[in-house]
Length: 98
Image 1 (cartoon, rainbow, N blue to C red):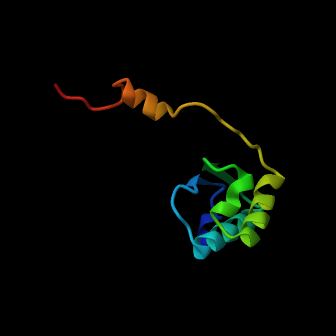
Image 2: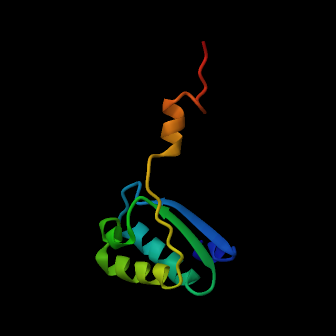
């Protein structure tokens, strides 16, 4: 599976850390990052700062994973409210019937 994913020029992993993960998931993430390192582009989104990846995977895997992710990375940190939530609360983007 990792080999197949790494055939793409860019792989996007969205919302890392949103769901609980065990050792197997941590190992899979490390294997993906390691396989793509300096060969393919990866894009990750997460509400967890890279320094907190040891909260979602074993520290022994988090350190080399983050090391490889950040080596050639362009990190973009965003702040502010969720635009989906703002739109939903204002009635935009929500199917409302009267």
